[in-house]
Length: 479
Image (cartoon, rainbow, N blue to C red; front, side, top):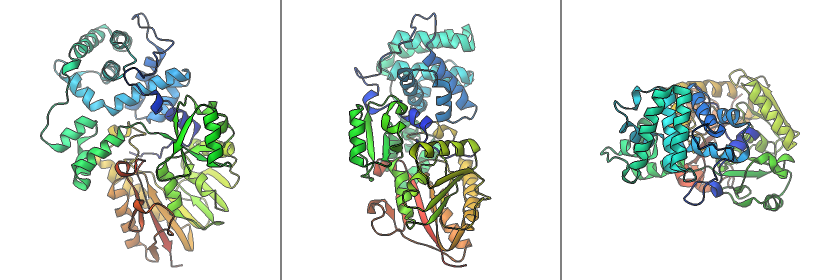
């Protein structure tokens, strides 16, 4: 299974990420107000809840959460988009715990139910137990009505009974005691057990717990100034009512602390004065340290945020992506940002449509295990076999990209994965099979020293408070 790179560079992704800021998270007495179009009588179902169920259906069909969310909520007002995002993303971050509680209250277990009904129960339980802005009668009544429409009256009776029992027993709900550390953490933080086991073997139980907690936190919006100073951007955002703070590891980026309803309502965004990029991604481009004035190819570019950063100092950046639609979105954002030396086009990274250049960035498609806080759907899609599949794809892309680098030029390989098969092992294999290449550390001061592991960049969510990232610099010494 391929896992396209995703971040919040594009306007669509940005609006999705903006749906829930720290200021708007649901806590007792401080949650989003119930939807203005809410109908809690049972006679109808709110559009936000219908959208949530449709998003879950698209996820079961293999669609990515970001794109499914944008499609299904495009007609909702900002407040309802925010509420829907809280519901769906929250359910995915707690899915294993919700499933355990539901399974105990369904005769024969939840596995016997239709997948659509299981998702409706999860959504109902999320509202009932974790969304403090939703009254219990609304969480139950609306889910019962929605299940009647989608699955029939028999299913709705089951939903009614299960959710009412959950409501009665909420004070006694607890995570079951499990002896195996991997099983216990997987249930507590809702991650696949096989992945938790890998991380415990690598980092130990304490660091793995910290990583899982980071994965379940809401990812902040980070703004990178374009054609303006950090101070001017901060002043502009605060004038629009958006509080800011300095981002971790990258002090010339701003955390948007909220409230953010829609980025397209912000004048500075419409004027192209900033784009969104996690510090981990920014650090990859700084670690690359391509010499100023060189021509750079970014052969797996979408959504294009790293290409924008490279264009700050490059003579020209040629950004390509396999998907024509994703390449088109890069171009649209480049136009908004008014980056004149960035040229985006559709091309297969395994067959690059460009001549030799001084620098090449391969920000390879990967399993994305470093970005689970932004993409909670990814943890449930990932399979053990995907590591081998993605490693093979990365190996082929890396070998093709190497042919584009002129003698003396630089090839930078990066991923947003935490897995050795996609990172260190990939670099070691390349060096072992490509004579005439050497690994090279970045220039001193390029990135914070704590993010360096020898000559390689390694950014960890549990340590750095950002997304995860890996990168290595490879210099072509031979012809």
